[in-house]
Image: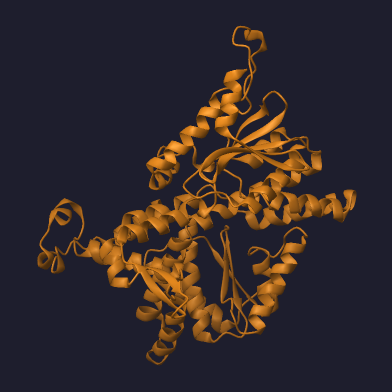
Amino acid sequence: MKNSLSKKLQDEQKRIEKIAKDLGLDFYETVFEMVDYKQMNQIAAQGGFPVRYPHWRFGMEYESLSKSYEYGLSKIYELVINNDPCYAYLLEGNSFLDQKLVMAHVYGHCDFFKNNQWFSQTNRKMMDQTANHATRIRRYIDRHGIDAVESFIDCCLSIDNLIDRYSPYSKVKVDMAERDKDYLVQSDIAQRKDYLNKFIDSGVNKKDENNKENETIRNPERPEKDILKFLIENAPLEDWQQDILSILRDEAYYFTPQGMTKIMNEGWASYWHAKMMTEHICSDSEIVCFADTHAGTMAMQPGGFNPYKIGIEIFRDIKRRWDRGQFGRDWESCEDIREKANWNTKALQGEDKIFEVRRNMNDVTFIDQFLTEDFCVENKFFVYKFNKKTNQFEIDTTDFKAIKSKMLFQLANFGQPIIQVVDSNFEGRGELLMTHLFEGIELQPDYMQECMTRIYNLWKKPINLATVLDEEGVIVRYDGSEFKNQKVNEMLSSEKKE
């Protein structure tokens, strides 16, 4: 890997860095490295880090990226790592204009990494940490063999999303988790949650209430969403297995803010690269080529989802509205369409506002607050469906509430189900009881069973999951050989008879 850029690119980097700082961006020192497409694919396959622990999934991802590049289906222009200093990789062979665009884009990302509060709890020395993780896992491979270690990693990676994404911010006064959760509450969903909770609270631990000596403290004392942490502390794991699971959990938490801010992060970097390129960097002869590249990045097909496009357009809309004073009580209460169309108090608060948004929000709060009906109409953000008769995508609905609800649902918890541990001694048998926080969509049986199988491999005893299947509350039990479902009302009836 080359350690430096050409003299021409080094000079351009210094110029672009100064432009970015003059515009108000604040970032850690940024180190650029030039790599060829094979090196770029290798780093991308490993999550952006040059050194990772050995595992077959990185090789599979590398092969996929390589074929996609060779067939002209995709091309990685840049990679940037949330670290101090930030490391960014430029693709060898790109045009000089493309390299300048990528540098400007990278400085937008680096500003976001440093200043957005959702990245505030991440490890800023993760480049060193991943190398350390790789060394530790290689030592375990030497001691226990590649098959045993790789098999265990396979098991852990399949459940590495079972963490509490908000736990790193528990010291923050604002309860950000509640903010996101409220967007998806519906009355019938809440009733089903209560239905499951009645069962859980009605005697999952059979205790003799008249004999307090037999009472035991439930473990965990309260529902635990960080299932990986619970398994590290309670599952019958060997020391090396416990350490590997801790490593994978640490890395899962590191990558979490990137998923929570994908739209904002890409939108912010795109907003600033567009501003810098058009107003400060491009020569007159380069503008058309830049516009062509930029337009390709921002393209979004019907039914598609392009975080670059959605993010940049919302940031531009915020800037325009706050510059024109289109916010606050007077604006909200105005019902005159013509007056609103010409509304301009020349407040000029747009730049301050976008920096405030960049600092405080994640994708859920960003979309909830700033995806307005006027914005959807102007940018043609609709819900599409594929018509098999015409063989085309067609607008399914222009209803703003439906559009916003669908987007928020996809963003909350990355669109993944929320599972939590409620009891490690279910019915006094040492079995694990988990609950699915039902949000209106039932679990896919194959994914559910795979997840329960992996957890069983770590817990070594039967696993129970309370959820909703076919619109009824059920407890799914896996004992290592087969899955059995029992309806919650049947179990409640059984408890009453006893």
